Length: 126
Image (cartoon, rainbow, N blue to C red):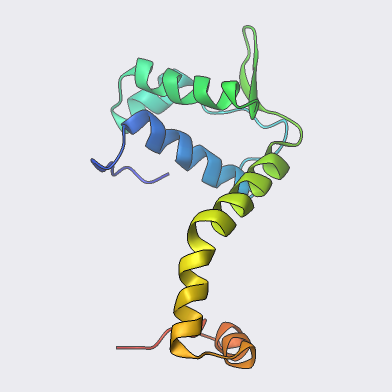
């Protein structure tokens, strides 16, 4: 996980989002334990309460479960829940802007597919 924090949102929320990214990327899988609150707090120089608040948010979303005396573990189906939520968020928040840009620039589906299949992902080098 990245060790840098920004001021755009609370640190517990950023930590929660980083754990979510690890689940979505397949780094953390169903049944895997989360790193202990104590270890995360020490490694990232955070207050343990901040880490606990991030983890509690994940538990409230039913993405992880607490096993008394053993820690927190990724729930079965957590990745699927996250994928569905991220897809809905993309379609509701990001896609309208992307679609408007595509239309404004007059890009065709073939041009978009060709750019996506390019070795550099369609990014221009500067």
